[in-house]
Image 1 (cartoon, rainbow, N blue to C red):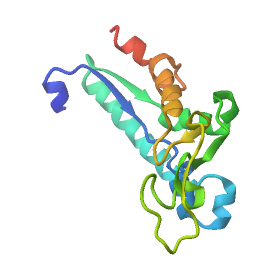
Image 2 (image 1 turned 30 degrees about the vertical axis):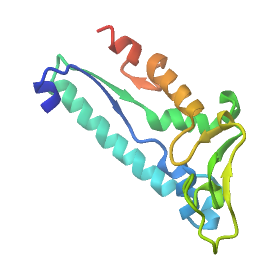
Image 3 (image 1 turned 90 degrees about the vertical axis):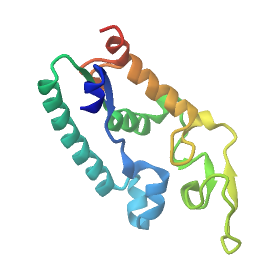
Amino acid sequence: QALYDAGARKFAISELGPLGCTPLSRHYVSSELKKQGCYLPLNSMAKSFNFKLNEMLAQLRAELPDAKIITVKSYEIYMDMIRNASKYGFIETRQNCCGAGEFHAEVACGMPVPPDKPFKQFLCQDPSKYLFWDLHPTEQGYRFFSNYLWRGGSGAVAPFNLQTLVTL
């Protein structure tokens, strides 16, 4: 409301991504759940948040009819990259490109590994082949995400993409 009152009329609001599919989330769950790929309870929480966010955005669209509000479907965008990794040129969506330990997520990228740990820091040779750098996507992951945001259809950005928003 404060932004609107200050004159803002164009908004891009991002949903949560699949939090249970990050290497860090995978590291913290039981070994049985790790075999499934994603930690489903955390993904369910993200989906619930996104549902409520979309309810709130629908209400805002009704209350602020001259505001242009788009929803970035981060969950769907990242799940597509995870499910169809080869389409994006990724060979690794489960582990970080940089870090240490299980999924290269036990010790953050660039941080010292405790001497009692049986592993060392890992740095992949080609970050463009990894979806995740650390907790965040790689440059290549962000490139695909931003392309969806700019040009994507309603499955990625609704009710229209950022390219359309800037022309309104």
